[in-house]
Amino acid sequence: MGLFKDSDDVYDTLGVFFEELLAHPDLGTKMANLNMVMHVRYTEPLADLTLDTTLSPPVVRRGEEPERYDAWMEMKADIGNRFWLGDLNVAAAMARGQIKARGGVARLMRMIPVMKPAFGLYRARLEEMGRSDLLGAS
Image 1 (cartoon, rainbow, N blue to C red):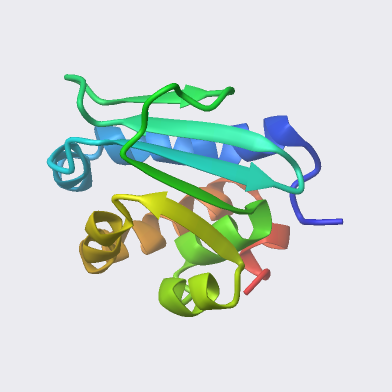
Image 2: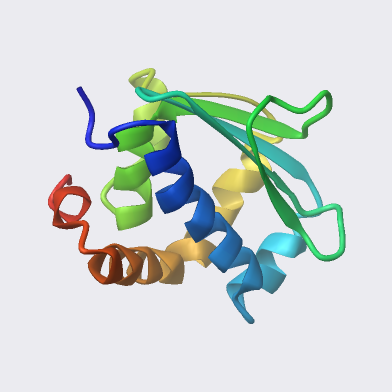
């Protein structure tokens, strides 16, 4: 079993973090500039998150996969946690099949270096939540 106890745990951790990123004065603007719909399907436990940066302001939706998306990714929730901790090489994880992706993934890959400051924000959020179980997951 993974580190997240259920779908609500994923939504309350990663989903809320995505919302905070979109509201961040610097990183939110950079994410909005992607101007795309990105869907992330987390498994173990199942949780679907859609980031729609085509809207103003951008939004995060929880639940079902959207009818239209520009990029789609699927990974275990624990892999998503490792990414936001800064402890995951995305290209290697894709090669190993830990991350499945389709659509405008090249645009997302170009954003990874820009998003590095978010790794520290995610760690700080986990510390605030008292989630040492997720912090030690790398």
